[in-house]
Length: 244
Image (cartoon, rainbow, N blue to C red; front, side):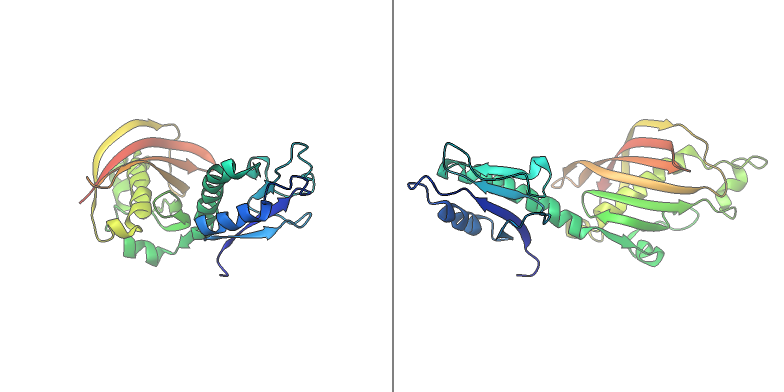
């Protein structure tokens, strides 16, 4: 399949005649069919690689394999089959998540969020992994009506609206999941909210939110978010939401 994740494999020299190295990988193929095990080519990058070495001398070469140090796994025998399966599954999930990263236009944001101006604080989304994390942006336009009263002679974007922006970013990462499609996100709580920098007219905000905890059977979710203005942290908070 074209969408399979390639995992590099390098075998040792086969000096242990009692250890069928190829059979181990064939068994792994049945346990993790979402990946493709390919022979390592020197210098070619892979999400991860397996060293299949059943001899005590550990003769398989490693220094030309282009993977991060924590993405190299040794299989020394059949007893390592299940740990290797778990390792490969973790690599697959991480690689699949990266493939799922997508962006949203303003029109797509409007299709997802129920909020509207002047209480809509997300313009576009530059990176979204549904159910995991999101990076969004919002331009504090001088025409934003709520700033006319906060304050008339010194307009400042309210801190509570910065927290609302975090919540709306969290709404996007949740409402793009099938289990929450069509639901309405409601505030349940705010913890550890800090306001560190004034947000002024003309600022473009970067809004981040990540999933901390979820109890899907109760429709309860906890997220942590940050708001940056001009590259500086302006606000951060932990929020809890009810998906009704």
